[in-house]
Length: 185
Image (cartoon, rainbow, N blue to C red; front, side, top):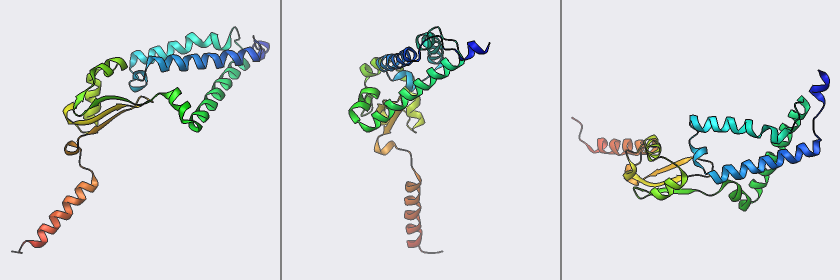
């Protein structure tokens, strides 16, 4: 029993290489698939991610079922991610290579249906994002952007933006000034 828990089935060099290669391959595949999967992790996407992790498990650890082998694979995976994230922070070109660039999905009150289709996003999902930002429809938007991390950003046109605390404070100050000019009864 103890032997099976601590005896690695393959060499640590091979395990390191396997883990790094699988990590990079998944990074490329997820980058090619697009940002939509990151933007809206629905039930189907969650199932795919769970199955994907199971599918690549043996590619990472080989025929090694040991505790030490699994922990070593996890360590290599986390270290690889840590190194790539640090390099992406250091070099902007590398960050763009890994994450991509923002994608404009709508501008000046109209959707870019070609880009929406290319990203695999549903228009009803964008309508929900607009409502979350306080808009009533696409006609009220100035810009809709899908960020590299999958976040949808919606900028409403100037007159359609929701009032904030500064707007309310300005209205109160104006009302107070008007009240000060009115004769008291």
